[in-house]
Image 1: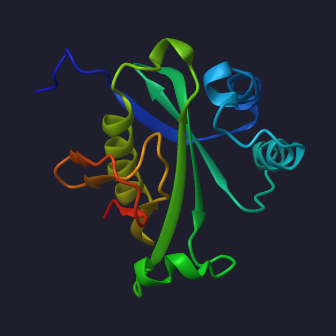
Image 2: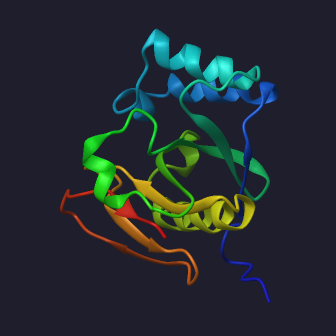
Length: 166
């Protein structure tokens, strides 16, 4: 039975109709402080929305049916980043991810851990090639290790190696 006190968080691949929302989020003060706002970063996102994937895949998270966050993923083997080598699964794909809550009304509501748990569960179910999901260390959100099958989270204030979500 669903818990009606908890918001319903779902994900979908970003598409052309998400462009205005995602660009507006990039201009929000809480995003501008931490996010890549370069012309190259914006161009990469806009190209993806038009069907050309260069580096990242973009996902939109909806809360109770309305867009509120963005998740970016990439194959950890791309470019052979040496610091990720010990964490790359020998079986299937390993993705790295980055994440932002774009919608200002949802900032500070304690949604980071449940959103990351929901994305890990979504990715595990929707992408059969995926063997492992890593979150890069950031002083603002990570490391936050998530057990995708149980939906629980364990967060630490220390910055260390990438968090392995499953």
